[in-house]
Length: 159
Image 1 (cartoon, one colour):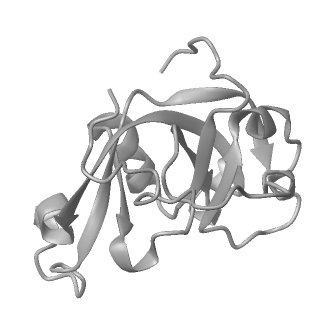
Image 2 (tube, rainbow, N blue to C red; image 1 turned 180 degrees about the vertical axis):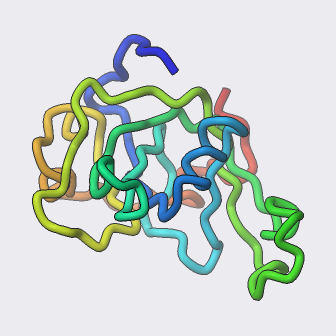
Image 3 (tube, rainbow, N blue to C red; image 1 turned 120 degrees about the horizontal axis):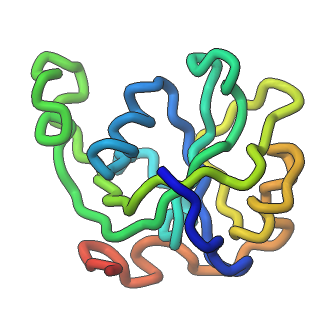
């Protein structure tokens, strides 16, 4: 994971929670992140995914440190995504598998001064790059119709 040229400030970013180190490892090593169809946020389509790390990350907890380009979206069951978890109660639920390019480190991590319950934050790369606290990531004004279906991205490759 080495630093590339930073994205344009107006590139769209969806900050998503990674509850466990295993979830960040899947994004880094296998190049994907999952979102249950039942929990897709209104502004799901984005150029990049950034990752908010929970308390499970020890000294790196409650911060955004990594981002990755979104390549494409596809639908799969949890069982298809995590075959070793055959007996999971949500094994047959459908998820978006967000396929990602390489993880990149933010030039400066974005901490949360106070514990924040984050699931998704729609923002742009300029705000992500300049923020000194997670609370600064929320866009003051959100453009209408900026969701996965409205953007016509479902099932389409973004390469």
